[in-house]
Amino acid sequence: MRIDKAERLKRLPPYLFKEIDRQKEQVRAKGIDIIDLGVGDPDLPTPPHIIDALKRAASDPANHRYPSYSGMADFNAAVARWYQRRFNVDLDPSKEVVTLIGSKEGIAHIPLAFINTGDVALVASPGYPVYHIGTRFAGGEPYFMDLLKQNRFLPDLEAIPSEVAQKATMMFINYPNNPTAAVATKDFFERVVTFAMEYNVIVCHDAAYSEMAFDGYRPMSFLEVEGAKSVGIEFHSLSKTYNMTGWRIGFAVGCSDIISALGQVKSNIDSGAFQAVQIAGITALEGDQTCVEDMRQTYTERRDILVAGLRSIGLSVEKPRATFYLWVEVPQGYTSAGFASLLLTEAGIVTTPGNGFGTAGEGYVRMALTVGRERIREAVERIKDIGL
Ligand SMILES: *Cc1c(COP(=O)(O)O)cnc(C)c1O
Image 1 (cartoon, rainbow, N blue to C red):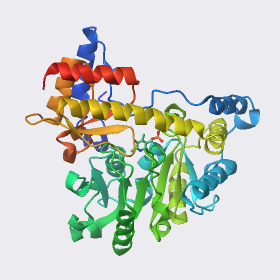
Image 2: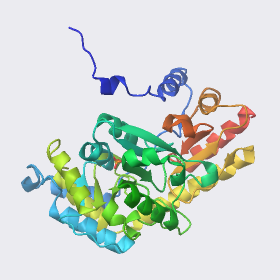
Image 3: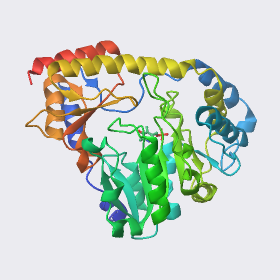
């Protein structure tokens, strides 16, 4: 028989990292030692006290059964306490918090709650691909808001045509930002709230990198802004803060009507996160936070080495205040894909071409600080040797 994929899969844009993946395999097959700055996945292990909490919880038969759909009451309460401590934001854990199987899961599912066929979702370009793909899977159309250097990689809300804004039902934003490493200002969040109220747009703020910030800078929560809790929610993840990408645990918080609609979608699709993982998540949020400070220290050191090294070669890059990414301008005469390909074939270094995150990412490559200091120094030497 013929296996015919649904339109929603056929209509997906081509996978832009396919070419780089193919080249990576070729380089690897030649036996060349690869330095992978491509993936946004921490190379460091989960802190031991969190692993110990999981081990204990995994042995308890009470945790072997189906968890609650909206998350364990204890986990949601820990999230609310964390928001209070970290951002001074009050949340009702029974109505304003939902546990997710990683924040990607919630981001992918939320358009099902609010998008009707043909509705528009405002999505940043470049951006995390799940925003526009989740929108398309729900039958909606993404409208891309370009993140440009001259706007400090914040979307220009005034540039959105009013007929697009009228049709929009959702907006996805993400600060500290993947892939540009940009950070938001309070003023920007306030403009988002005003825009959302004017056009009746649900705001989804992805704050996966809120704790990965340097030099004393502490990103704010979107929910700290007046009115934000009536228009939006914030997605969070333990993945990057506690090196827990493989564990699949995150959460969304904010407007109770939005949270409950997301919960309604989820209760019809999944059955929640493993309770033992949620219990370990409580330990992560409420235990010793030295590990978070260590994580910041590690990435600060790596960032400083790579930024100084790339600048010494003549490459143009800003020193990020947050995230573990460098958004590096490609030298004149190269495209994103061309430069990424050069780094891979001539230096064995994997980077991510910026256009893979959306057309407005053209002209950049993203480098992730997910290898140790010696490997970063080695990467700089190798790029130097290409003789750009
Ligand atoms: C890594 C990342 C996430 C986190 O995803 P999880 O599913 O929680 O692991 C979310 N958003 C962005 C932009 C990311 O880079």
